[in-house]
Image (cartoon, rainbow, N blue to C red; front, side, top):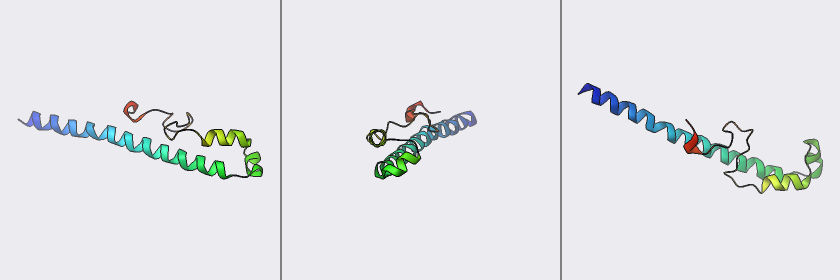
Length: 83
């Protein structure tokens, strides 16, 4: 009987991992949207300071929220790919 309880407890712990992955992915996507919005609002002087042209900034700003940059901590993985 106690083996069954331990097994259910382990299953509950494993069920939390995907939820945490979804939340981490969602936070990363929201951060990308916010960063891209600020990038689109920069003037030409600011863009020049960071080495981007207006067209590059607008191209980046037009990316979909789920299109997370490969340099991010999640490296563009979808929530179900995280463990």
